[in-house]
Length: 157
Length: 371
Image (cartoon, rainbow over all chains, first blue to last red; front, top):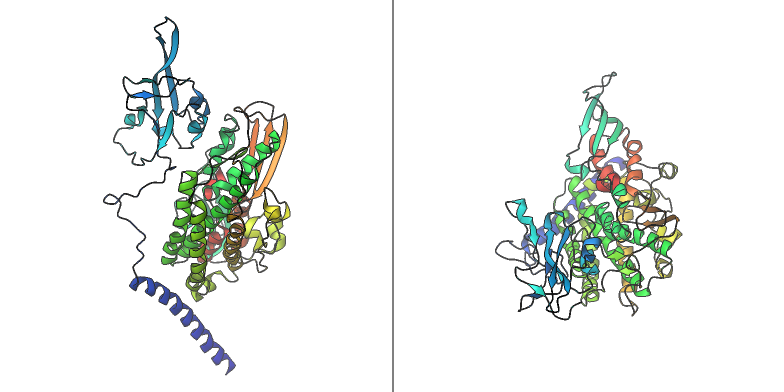
């Protein structure tokens, strides 16, 4: 007799445990106020300020940047993502002055570790919040970060 | 690689589980010898996601190599970085500011919570319950938002650097963490209602995959896997690092050693992590978030070793330095590798379905095993 009552008790306990769980999922089925998903292409979430999308170089209205071509970012990068090609400008006084010719950034190698941004002494580069990097040709992932015709801002050493 | 055989000479079937199998959570390949549905022997075959992180680190500087450890155990990225930073700091003899120490612990405990929530959701999914996964991700999403704001990434974060942390916490950090704690505390009962008390879940985990305390020691198991067998091995408690010595928290121990015990250890550990964060979140000391270090780090000649507790167990970081700017040799003692070695012992004699529940409660992360 005790066997039978134990059996019934066990079945009762099992069914009630299942029903408690079902009640919880049923609650969320009928109370769908807290929708936590967003439909992506129509609705784009605003990324956080510090989100690391890709490295960009900041240019001001006069098309001037702050990159002196010191290669600190190139040395700090663990993956060889950044290559800086320098050139020598002739100043009006007739002196040679180092400046960047092109700041080549390989997005396909970048792991967004932020070490280049930390290493930069003049805050010339920063991380942008753009996260949509898909392209049809991988050659498009190699970018030149300094704008055409841009030059070094006055006073930045 | 061995030859692929269907049967052993005794007439038992050899079954390949993985390398692409939903319940292995990655590219883990298991050769299991089965008689009917009873597992006679299990032989893990690893190396599918080996990226030679240890060798790679030898050519990277002491600032650079830390970022690659976020790719080992990606669910406890901050703890991996913390271990490397502690080892480098040991060599450099750098004093870390108090503010950085506290931020590091809060961030680590948040990572532990996020890791355990993902584990809870995926374990329930392995055992046939789909909806807990979404409930787990609802709370986990709040943590990833906090991480995104402060560390700049959602998964492979590198925030902890030698000398402190990379940037100060976001102005919203404390408010958001408090919001998360309120949300988590109101929902933890739901976790137990949905899964812990469920009769199907209990039948599939109680008495399954028993690991005795002696076996846990001999296989080198650490973390919640060993604590489920009653082995006291929480590095935070027995060898306190960082600021853990000033924090009140309990080491969670269960004595049964079965899958359910390991499950309960992790569930109770989540509550303990919340308890740690509650103590610290209002008491973040003012000051610098990073100690002054040289631009190029050079460790003195010698060997340096640190151990710390990740979400899965004990992580050891061993650096041999020749006095240069790059390490001569780096070795990581990862928790997943040792825990996997006990799997054969735990599943022998059980059914194939039990393998899933045992593997789920071991909480294996394959990139951590292969490195």
